[in-house]
Length: 81
Figure 1 (cartoon, helix red, strand yellow):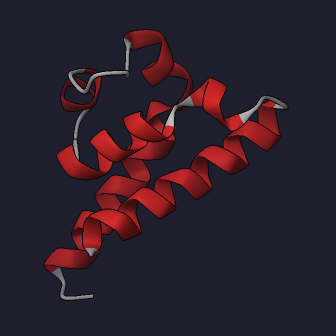
Figure 2 (cartoon, rainbow, N blue to C red):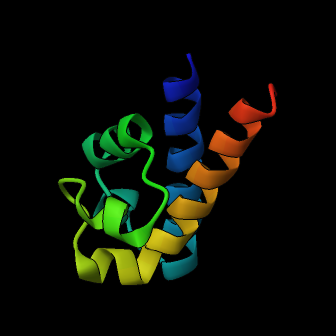
């Protein structure tokens, strides 16, 4: 299931980010938010901040990293990967 694969990629990115800033992963984003991102697959900042649990501050800190994962995942699907 593509949504589950994307969720796992987002979780992995969150773990990497958490290590970088020396925080627990849930502080960056809860699993429930990552699941909503995997389902919604936002492609822009505007799309992403409309997802429940992602605010302007959260986006400014971490959103660009999650957007890269979502965009590359969606491009892969379109190319049949």
